[in-house]
Image (cartoon, rainbow over all chains, first blue to last red):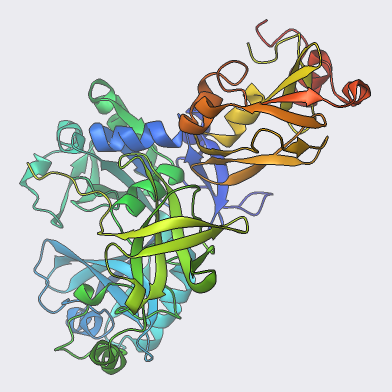
Length: 365
Length: 133
């Protein structure tokens, strides 16, 4: 804590030295941009970028019942998660709405971890403590854990140069313990950019060592530090949901387009309501929009013939697709690809067309 | 050149270049730096009237939308079509190709309410002469 009331990651001084513009985010003083959002976005798509995600939450679970317990609290197939693998899923509540979106990691048969959104750490911890059986040990190590993410097509080469392994041996969503820049680290092949990439977990005390080593090793590859601004444009082009925008405790996974994260033939919190929602079919859905004549933003109404029928959840200029793109909740009947809608921007209805998502998908090599 | 000496400035970070009674309007280097990458510009059409210190249009950066306030009153003679097509001109050439409107000046007296280059530098916290001109 500082006199601004904002928390600082162990890399705070590095961000200032790199000329970052800092902004408050979920109670943290975080870099929004360094060189500029568009340049950073392009660096990640074309070469590599380095993110400080130390504000995010890291939970650890231990015990013979840990895997089964998490399987009942997370929407995806955690029971089937093998050692050395990670999986995306949703923490749901009894109503079948979304408490958070998370990644669950299995390090050892009885040792698992979960990465959660910074804004939800306290809420998720309370939720988990309420439902976890007494024989599962739960540790919230968010305050002690730094998360550094090299992302982009050259991340594999850069990280391999400073890690004690060829990280290309990790499959997508694979996770392993190794050393990075000489310090013990957990490395996962995960990310939030739509590119190949990694997330490196280290104790706070080792954060600057790992950050400096990666920036140094990445210099010749065009690695750049990336702020939260480009993190948002990258995830939006890839159509990844952002908690607080597309999903929250008022949205269910079906309307959010996250049915694929729900294993409905198992028991988990809210499963019956989610199955029923799928059976009924959602009345509204997240649709991808391309907007011409303005930039749609979170909260802008979506209109048809002047009537508000939906709402924009996220909107920006997408540097790679070079279009103004948005995600919005719209009536199911208006969610078909090709549907002509409008977004109300500054009292004016500007044209928007429903398009296929993701807006951007990297070519497989 | 971050604050050209021959222009007048508003506290809201717009500039005016006067040629006869034609005023060219844009936003300053400082403003574009604060905004970040500009991706959309909305400007009034020829014949529209703008009023001093009232909103004349909007620039959108990747992050957010911001109003542009007219530093002077008058009738719009021309808007910069190039900046509408290529909004990044606001970042790359805020005092040149990134201009926004040409306006027929209604009241020369309004210029008194604008800042000189030195006063504008002080306003944005730069010491005089540090602007690189």
